[in-house]
Image 1: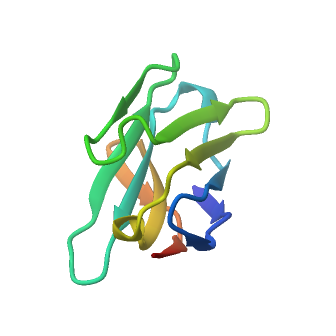
Image 2: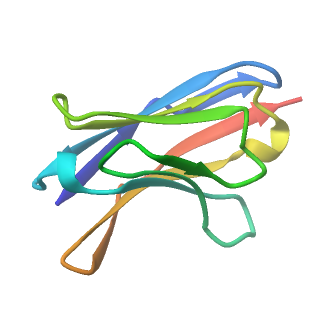
Length: 114
């Protein structure tokens, strides 16, 4: 299983970025997909989940600003991040599980300046 994340970069507070995560080696459409992030000096945290049926869930700190979505034809997971804040600065990882094993992508850095 490979999860190839991209789309991170530098943004100013209030701006938007979109992350993508291409999944290889799994039957993408049947798997729940997630985005995690890890800020400097902090533990990795789950921020958004999308089920195989498209049901979404968000942690409170990103609710209303971030949108998780998926394209099963392209086998790609997305995270639209709006109204970015400096506290969103972190490495962002896509995640899935297969046969009870966790798979994380390599991570993409998002840096938000004030």
